[in-house]
Image (cartoon, rainbow, N blue to C red; front, side, top):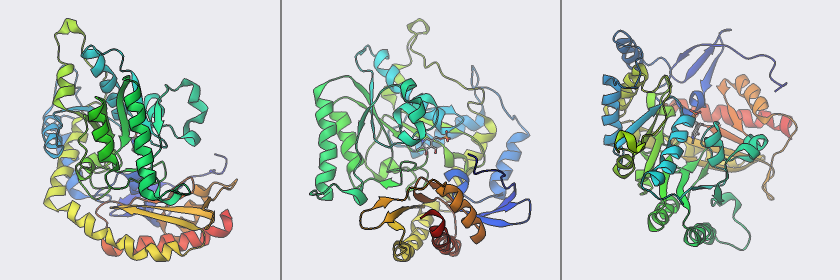
Length: 427
Ligand SMILES: Cc1ncc(COP(=O)(O)O)c(C=O)c1O
């Protein structure tokens, strides 16, 4: 942490641009932590917040409800096949805690007390709270808390860039699936399988091969295990579909949304459950089947109002189609990026690109340095007018979803210049 002595102050944002207090402007290549949809200072989103702020700014969802959250629940159910009810929270980690609690309690509620284990995939990420850290264990992030985390059963994810020797990519995928099935069939104590939907983000932009997620969902059905998806970073258009699990043909029992839900303007998340899950919680008062979970700002009307406007704008401006078209600009730059001598792999889907940095292309050795690669890229990026943040040895491009084609070209050219400039500082 000593490398960060001062921080630039962002005082304004407009479209894809962030302006600091000294008057410098940089492209927001990380979409302000992967959540920005329409760029900064969008008048329609601002209006939704200000209009709602004149009615009720916050009132709790304990014993009460409010109009924006009721409308939002309908909107979310409409876009989420198989889902029936919505449970609100105010950040993605909490939404995942809720998903975990729902999944574990479901089995208790229906009288199946032996199903207590959670299965996950290696290098998944679901947030920084204790339950989320347990199910999304990334050793570098959470190693210090290992003893305090609850244990999970982890399975590998096929990574096309690192296929084990002697295997084809298809063999590798089948091996991973076989490991899952073998464990599922051995002992009937798994409550739920939890994974990010479509791709692992923080775990290194690992995009699942076609049908991988679908096959896991089928195994879950076959072995009576709940299938829980995290679409916090990958849903709402980030990978090019409104609802990623629909594209993956894998309907979950529980799914979580966050980040882009409010367009990136306020803090809100939602955990959706199927009717089967919901019904298990609705006994008589004395049955104690409730889900004991709630936060002060659960169902905040300002956040719900801006979410409703955001969802409406996706439809109005055909955002998903636009993302699919604009996303092709990334492909134009694959070759140029791959040719850089410290780039080992370029992975891309929708409005997401991960550029893996290596010190030896042939051996695919990840760059390891005592310096913070993130800091080097932040500084070099700033010199080029782009705000970049790396995760380990991966440069993450996660721009506002509505970025224009010409803007994305500028972002990519500046990223290329940044990688070249950063090289001498990290090798
Ligand atoms: C897939 C995924 N799940 C959950 C979270 C946690 O969300 P939050 O940071 O809002 O708590 C993140 C955050 O990056 C994420 O990428």
